[in-house]
Length: 275
Image (cartoon, rainbow, N blue to C red; front, side, top):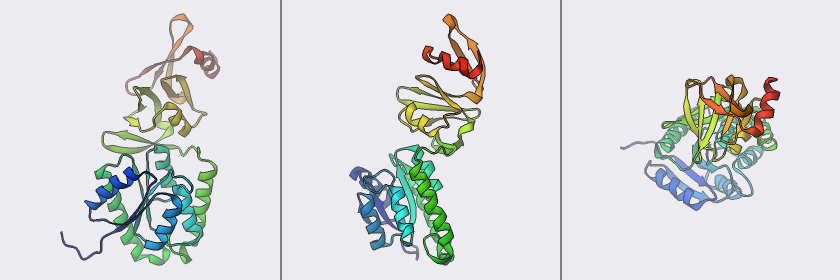
């Protein structure tokens, strides 16, 4: 396909060489020109200043400067900001990425269709910013108020890394959905896979443990009723007495799932509902 538009230039920054190679392989098939690669946040800042790429695929978790700190440093020095696409193996960073104005995020391992989607989103944003260059976030002048607000947001994120954003990422078939925490009925783990149920959707979280998922959730409404289950207490439909003074919880998801309460958590259940 012939086009007069120059190819999008990209920079890949990730401390894992295999992740960089995998992403470069996918980008090479899309016509994106990878101008350089870096392995940490300090290299990221230097390479962005040197190459002025259109797009940066930036790993969130890196030694030294993490992805958010890289973005903050560029903003504070009023550098021209490229389009940022965060790459992460963890859903909680994906949600934070949107909070700090990244145009997209990619969950590892990378999926070619998702990479293409992210590039297309970057392409559209580049066209928009070229039309309103003086007002874009990456330029001084009219964008300063936005930049200052963005710095404050990043600082807040870094000081409160477990801020409960209100959203979690749910994989349903090939889609990645952002759902409100309050809509989540319960989560369960079986053979290392975490399933999440809402009243309308069933899907999976990419968190590796229930502890990791709980870190993202509001502790005032989510409760570890059993070692394999986390429940939203606002979605408990019925407390069912079980044998030997134990209980089960009937949830208000579409299957009306019954969840056991472990003996260790029975006292907490009685406190919650004054049983």
